[in-house]
Length: 185
Image (cartoon, rainbow, N blue to C red; front, side, top):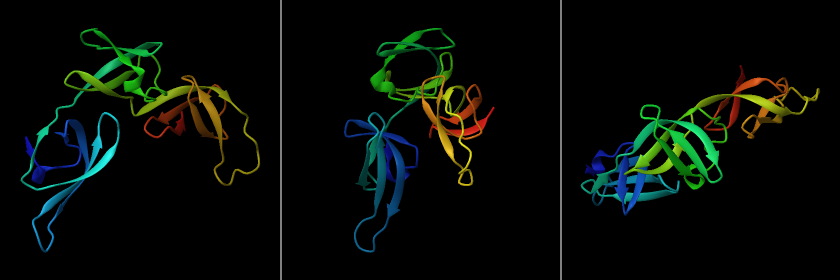
């Protein structure tokens, strides 16, 4: 159990039957009345954000989120298969739990599988990936003073905006959190 007075950013709690991560918290001591803790909570399973106020003495159950490195093997229709590199156990995860988090991930790459009580709710790809550009329009000379970009398709099929000097066949580094081009490799 954790009391509201001990809330910190990043702590995960069980509240009203859901699992929330604390994004922001603020201890408020008004001039009149009792102190309280104002929080912004992110629902881990569906991504929704809610704001709640707690009394500092209120207690919540602390939720344990397990993050485990697993290797992405392949997808078969609606299921994505991952393997534990230590035990070689394979687990299927539905595309509903994954969403679009694997759009920059190639087969055989390590990802973090997030689960609570054995139920997988999210897959975190590596922060940075290096991918080869498979389709790219040639750059048009002219308006380059503004840092012009062009759309390209990488080997996983995802679209990325890249600078004009990048060509088809180049390997680029991408930030998977934002989907932005970082550099040529």
